[in-house]
Image (cartoon, rainbow, N blue to C red; front, side, top):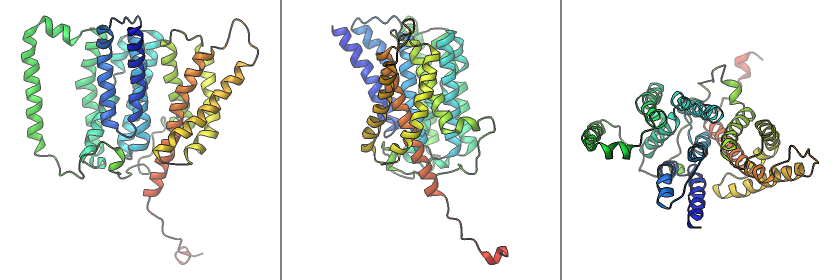
Length: 366
């Protein structure tokens, strides 16, 4: 009984903590990252055995990273970092989906999770500086450095070599010396470079709204031709929700929905939400109003599932109502956040655009 309670508490925490990322990005994602690292140890301490721990872990990793990505739509007002983080996110997401469908571990090395550390880097910068100080070479250089120097070795260590830091260091105590040397070098470099950092633009605050930043690069930095279709909100929202739900579908032990059913159902609900969601999301912009918008959108989506459940079906293809409702809840949360933050992003861009001077009829000869 105790073990079941621990599982419920940990899983609930892994769903609830990420919901703070849009408003408190840095502490919330660090908390999600720490819980992700500690949950297996918690389960072991209470004698909980997970037969599909890796699948469960990957799905909940994708959940909190999805919330982090959607939060960038609202909070990252500089076009270059935003497009960079969007590429890193979808690149990783496609890799995780491929891994869940195929099961080849090298896919996680080929599609490393550079997104998460890049997100943390940007939010650390925002603590004290206007993020628009970062120019394109800085942004791309940091992303490449994280990818090559940090994530590829880490993904190889975890997913290919399947090594555990505690076990390796415990069996080889001498490794503490190079680990300590690396840590000391990192601290020394930080202290040396700290003197060269520019003067802070504002005092530290964990609240993302404490320091409104400048919209930069949206109009001047058009998307690449091959990327443009994905930037259509209906296409991106459908792609995002579908990929996330496919990952969960491969993990849930009770799932009886095939991928065709799941994809069609998501497409129908996203299309329906494209008429309802943006209108609801635009009613109020305060954080307190989000619960009402989420509840109304969820009620519409649940109503669709209930309606579909009343339709006579073949006994060989019954509708898995509990699992369908779980996916409806997941879809509703992601789609509502997406619509809300995209609406706020467009409002920020419009507010920051310079006003055009009125037409001078004499100058144009009319």
